[in-house]
Image (cartoon, rainbow, N blue to C red; front, side, top):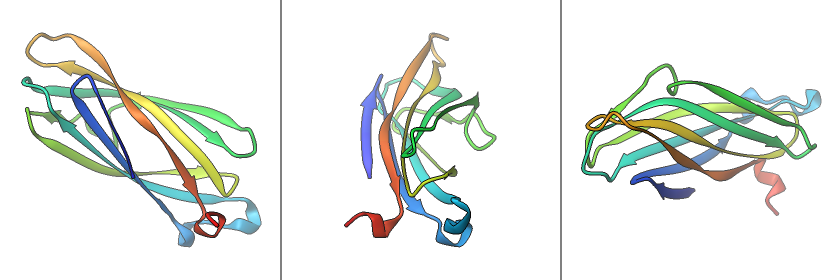
Length: 128
C-alpha cells in the first residue's frame, strides 16, 4: 500500500492480482486497485478528471484519461473520504502506474491537480 498527500488531498492505493481474470498463456494479467481519497482541506473538493500513466515491464507505455472515477465525480467535504475499486490489464507479470486527479475547490471554484502516488502491480510469485 502506498500513500501521498498533495494539495491537501491524501491518495492511498492498494493493489491485488486477479488470478481468476488472468490468462498467463495469452499474456493477459489483470490487476485490481483500491483507491481511497481523503480531503484534508478546510474546503469541499470535487474530483473532475483522472489521468493515468501505465507502464508494462515489456516497455509498453499508455495513458488513460477521462472524466471522474468509475463513472462518478465525487464531492468530498473537509475530512471526508471516498473509496473505489478499479482495474488494469497488463501483458506482463509486472507493471506500474501513477497519475493525477483534476480537482476543484468548490468554495473558490479554482482547479488544481492532486498526485496519485506511483504503485506497482505484480503477480505474487514474482515477488521472491
